[in-house]
Image (cartoon, rainbow, N blue to C red; front, side):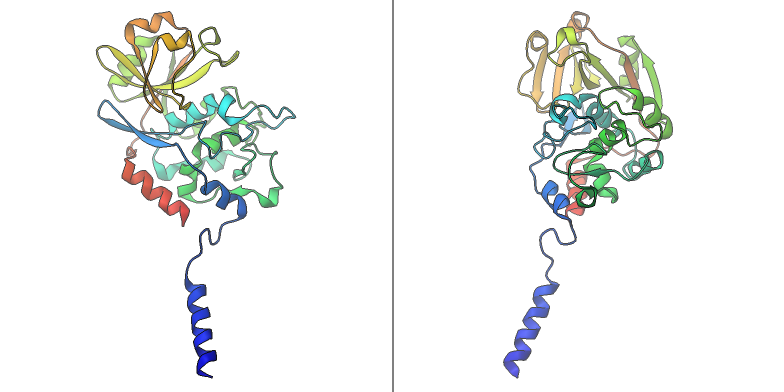
Length: 289
């Protein structure tokens, strides 16, 4: 009898110990078990959270809904990731889940796709519902929106239609310009500037490559780049200097040699607090529970 009672007690204690991934579905557990390159980067005395589109956790995911299976996050999601990197550094953390109010349904992802209608069966996908997960998978939420999970049924994951819709919804103070001096003035006041290098200076196809200008000093302008590459290909690599993964800089005197697109200037909202390494890790720990 004593032996039976002891076994019952041990079984009870065993079931009280949380298992790894307890409460998680297989896709959520898989995704959260992957290596991540996302990090907080320090630029001119300020901290910025930067998501890497080629991070192993999602680099091979599809970012489109049509039959073209070659549109992968690591190659074609620079606009959505650059926009995500800008927005996450101007919109308060607790406001991020509000994006679902302009989505058709809560975003779902899996190891194969961030797009709404591709990947595994709907019942097997990871549904993003928690505040901490909206931050962790913020760029994939933007991908989902751009790939059709929006009220207008627009499906352009490599387009820019979603920029105005999302910034307007979050009431972000935004300016669109072609004048780099206007962007310089705004950055000196704490703003971020989303723009792109056109295709004639990059290897990224007809759209070009998008990134975020974060600040400048007397000689250089610094950019947050979602493509954590070691070195840019030529000819852009002649002007872009890698500081660390996710951070590049360009001499201000070299900017006229590159072809810039429209510049979207975003100013931080009231209540926004920058992410520190400690704060970001706390949110990841919460996400892993």
